[in-house]
Image 1 (cartoon, rainbow, N blue to C red):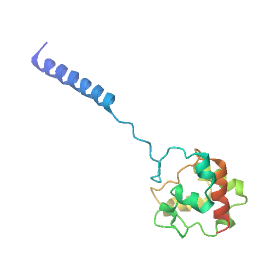
Image 2 (spheres, helix red, strand yellow; image 1 turned 90 degrees about the horizontal axis):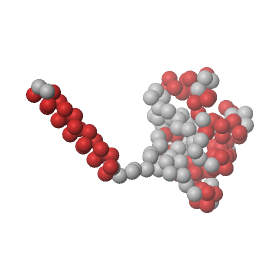
Image 3 (tube, helix red, strand yellow; image 1 turned 180 degrees about the vertical axis):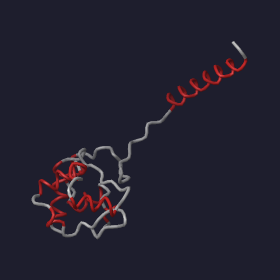
Image 4 (cartoon, rainbow, N blue to C red; image 1 turned 90 degrees about the vertical axis):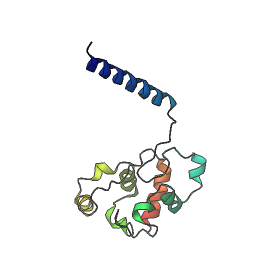
Length: 140
């Protein structure tokens, strides 16, 4: 082996050793979702006691849509959305998988108005909790 090959092999060996040490000693951090809330599931007992507006806050929706539902520079207002949703179930389906609704004209406008912003999917949340949020939003 030539000297440059020895140096490359040594560097590669040290890199692999340090990489493996880093992986073995790495602390596991809980995943964070888009809203900054902990992605760990809340217990059913915890969320069953919360109202729709409290769940709206707990899930981090106020970070983008605002506390008063008037919208921010990150997301549209949610006051008066009843006119856009034919049923509570459609709104729940949207909350579970927003990407499936992105081909509709209204959402194309939102994408243009709020570039680089993504509505997070809440498919990992309890449907009952999403129903409470939908009921809350449809009465605003």
